[in-house]
Amino acid sequence: MKKQRIAVAYSGGLDTSVIVKWLQEKYNADIITVTGNLGQKKELIGVDRKAYKTGAKRAYIVDLQKEFVYDYIFPALKAGALYEHTYPMATSLGRPLLAKSLAEVAIRERCTAVAHGCTGKGNDQVRFEASIAALAPELKVLAPLREWEFKSREEEIAYCEKHGIPVTATKENPYSIDENIWGTSIECGVLEDPMIEPPADAYQRTVAPKDAPDKPTYVTIEFKEGVPVGLNGAKMDGIALIHALNDIAGRNGVGRLDLVENRLVGIKSREIYEAPAALTLHFAHRELERLTLDKEVSHYKAKVAHDYADLIYNGLWFTPLRHSLDAFINETQKTVNGIVKVKLYKGNLDIAGRTSPNSLYDTKLATYTAEDSYDHKASEGFIKIFSLPMKTYYRVNKNGLKKKKRLVKK
Ligand code: ARG
Image (cartoon, rainbow, N blue to C red):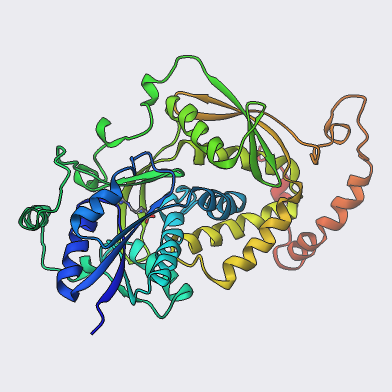
């Protein structure tokens, strides 16, 4: 019988290392590992070597940065998608792309199954498996963490030692960390108590606001059709721009979030996030939209943003609804052009200026000076018609205020 081939989403960490060996033994399979580069700081050099040492037949490292930034991150930015009004979803956006990349390799390598290292109580398993179901339903999905015998890290480490799997012997990190160019997600350890303030060592890529520079840093961000294209006057591609902004904002203590959130799988969890560039870009983009979007579009888009965020969080990236919402959002972004000046100071973001060729702000209409061109007289008729329904309702049902009640008591 031909040997089975399984493609494994591989990070090189403890769980996915154990998965490689465990699947190989359990299914007598050839293992192909796939590691995606989503712009994480963690070095990917050597990950393939480690995979081979662990027993992989082939090890892929796929550079997904450009696709991640332009086809996942920027659509979410244009949508203004923040889960529960807060979280810019670095992890949630990365999963469908990692799943897609895994499926592509699996098909090329004639695998019959793929495997991931997500746990049975998280959102990531849903994002992964729903994406595979949409893109490559013929692939079987294996989730070893939901079924294997190991009950602790120690048991996994013992398994590695028994099988000669290289385990990076660093001091045990008390946190579970997921990281990419759009942000870092940190949970577990003492963070599981929502009453405990995160210790300093929980933060991976931002300076504590109190240690940030005493002088504010100003940045200008240029947008074209809702997409950031320039930083501080220099044109930049998306990847470079996000990396640069992560550094600048992170140095100023900007980007930290502490969130109790509602998982798709029914539980509340507490997570710390660091997303310096993501929060700065969402802030600047929103400010530019205030200037350039028509009132009705702006108000309607806020509802779409809410739904779009839920859809990303819940693993529904590859759906007709997401494509349809993209069409709406892209239409709204045609006039979101211009430059936003942001002040970064000890963890805070402030608007310092905005300008746009598509600005709907008309000084002649807004001014209280002699330049005023607004038709004040037209207001009278407008208010008469505008208030007609309430006038009618109160006359019929409430009688307004009784005449004598209007008199001040002596
Ligand atoms: N709660 C976030 C989400 O569902 C992040 C999950 C992964 N977090 C982690 N620390 N490994 O998108």
